[in-house]
Image 1: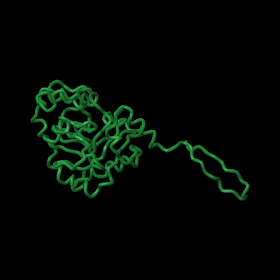
Image 2 (image 1 turned 45 degrees about the vertical axis):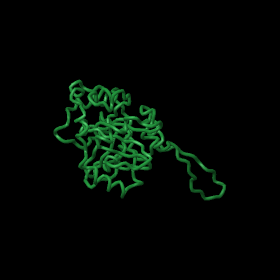
Image 3 (image 1 turned 180 degrees about the horizontal axis):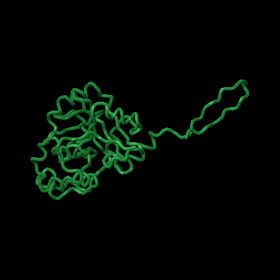
Image 4 (image 1 turned 90 degrees about the horizontal axis):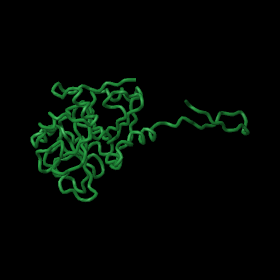
Length: 248
């Protein structure tokens, strides 16, 4: 079964370019053009409605786990963090288990804020691959950030993105994602009905997993129903034994 995600705007990079990012090979042309100004190209217009959506859906932040049927090159074996509902018809998320091979210092070489930062950038999805966002933990609610759940926040703000990776305190977590995933109205629900995704509740330990390469397999195995169902057959006498059957 093959699933087709919603198309992004016409100005996005070519499919080969996106695939190089997803496969951890960012084109040199992209690296040269990535400067501090690049951080300013954010989804700031969506920040306010997203915050309102987060307030109305505090306990409804989920993860999507692609099932084996999904063969789309961008979403195969993906774990997607769904963002709080915004006042828009789209469903938006970030792929959280696909790190690139490039550090933030390599991707943003002209910014002193990222000098020496060895954190890897993550492929967030094929839509607007040059738009960065950061998911991070914070003990206080920062301005210009959307609360996802617990002490986990999302920001598109350039200043807050820089701050999240400069002088971080011990134990504080932050990850940068390039691009995002999105679905048209009803599209995700249709894909779930067709058996394309499992859906579970998100938590910070999963979002900031130290072994993202293993995350899909672990969550897929956890979400998949057991092959064996144990039940009692109806009987005409109290002495009828219990039986076990396999549901293949």
